[in-house]
Amino acid sequence: MMKIVILTGAGMSAESGLTTFRDSGGLWEGYDVMEVASVYGWQNDPDKVLRFYNERRKQALNAVPNKGHKALAQLEDYFNVSVITQNVDKLHEKAGSTNVIHLHGEIDKARSSVDPDLIYNIGDSDIKLGDLCEKGSQLRPHIVWFGEIVPMMETAIKVAKKADIFIVIGTSLVVYPAAGLLEYVSDDTQVYIIDPAKPDIQIKQNYHFVGNSAAKGTPELVQELIKEIDT
Ligand code: OAD
Image (cartoon, rainbow, N blue to C red; front, side):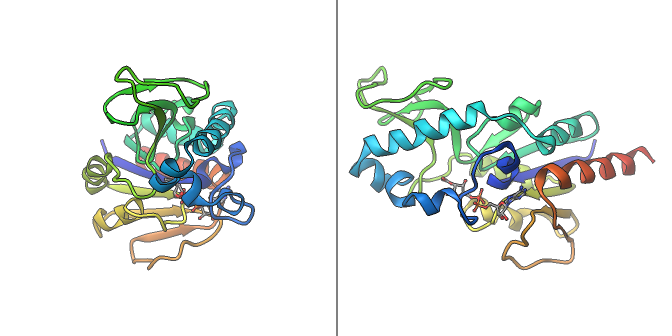
């Protein structure tokens, strides 16, 4: 079976009503990223960080997958599919994707602030100051913040290297190391980039830019790929 690897960012979930980060009106216009999504922010004002993610959690878990998420799940009937996402929402899983690597964490989980292996499913519950892990330390969102390593990166690199087809959807490709994944994709691999705005990267010969939204461009590309292997 051919291997399709998909890298998604906030634009994937924009048509599910979740705001992106860097577009006009994006989250980082309303919030200082260092105050709410960094190690410094957590040390400086943990309550503010918790409130920021409590709000994100409610929004993300109330959202429903769009036609783009659903089309990616459908690909699994025809291809060996891995989704690598920077999104902390669970919309790929809700749509039916079964092999999802979360590079930047998952909003429906909390973890210990002293032991990164102590991870708890919390669903849509808030995390409050005073909520403790079993070792007695404050719970924090299971999110990778600026200034932290990305533990799933090694896994993602291995997967990216195996891609026969690589699809990038709705990411500005400015946040590393995630943005560097494209460097591990072979020059023989066809790369499709679906985004209304062309990302500011060097477009190589094997890259195909699809200037469309995730909910429109993804189902179209998926249909084309399925048609190609059916013929
Ligand atoms: P950005 O907000 O940086 O980029 C969103 C991308 O989605 C842009 O390229 C938009 O053009 C595109 N876009 C907007 N609407 C779209 C639509 N309907 N369909 C398809 N694409 C659309 O978001 P990310 O690249 O995901 O990390 O940002 C990467 C990381 O930066 C995030 O995971 C987050 C953030 O800080 C952390 O919080 C750790």
